[in-house]
Image (cartoon, rainbow, N blue to C red; front, side, top):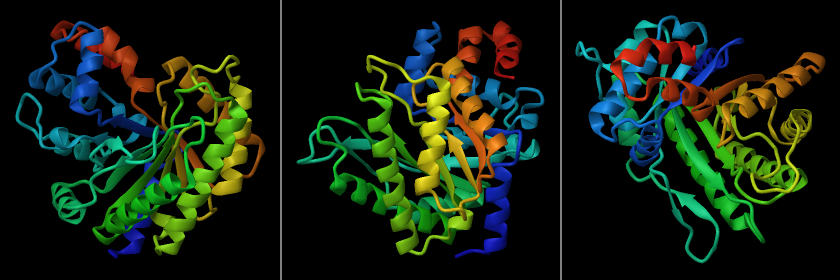
Length: 321
């Protein structure tokens, strides 16, 4: 493994108080859907201009410690030819690279999926590190349904997360471990807490088993809340209490920080739930720093203001701020 002191420093910087992470790593199909929703063109140049809008936002570094990039974005550039990764480094923002290759259906396990991308990961991490990335992200997906997630699915995905995390640390990069319990579904908050606790306990059990240094790991977690189709939705106070309770039962104190994904929630709801966690943090002594790692939760207002029009860039950047 690379110098642990440097890894600890990067991990600490990613969860510095008062800031968070911007997740600008949407796949091409996902970002195209978002662009189409605001009337923007679904092509490579529009995607480049949109990422440029985000990264050139004045004073973004006051609020953002790191930005998660897609492979196509880390290789791309601004209008003047400056590589996006150099733009971020110039602002003191840590470039983070998404390295998983999305999910496929899990054979013989209906309703469950598995994440791909381990085969050539070591080589890719070496290349990204040489480009300037200092952290990476891998997302595992856990759907909630009748009879799932299964113990097999949780164990298998946790093992893949451990292999990814170990490779990251070996190549001098901090792993952001993202076991996302999916918000979509009709489950109540009690079921969400049960599943999230089981997932996180297994993930950290296996990370430790495979000797991943937890002091150089960031957890990216979903909130614990009732599913999107549940008859009764969770209040922010319920979400905060269930989420912190889950972490206390699941996440070792050595982990320096936990960042939240917005996970399909509206920006307003994602913010309210984050505020509820922060309110508990003020009343309890907890071992982790909390921060956001939002995509839709930060970017949707900017997309709506921009609409793919050059003359709306400043307004969109203000919406992002």
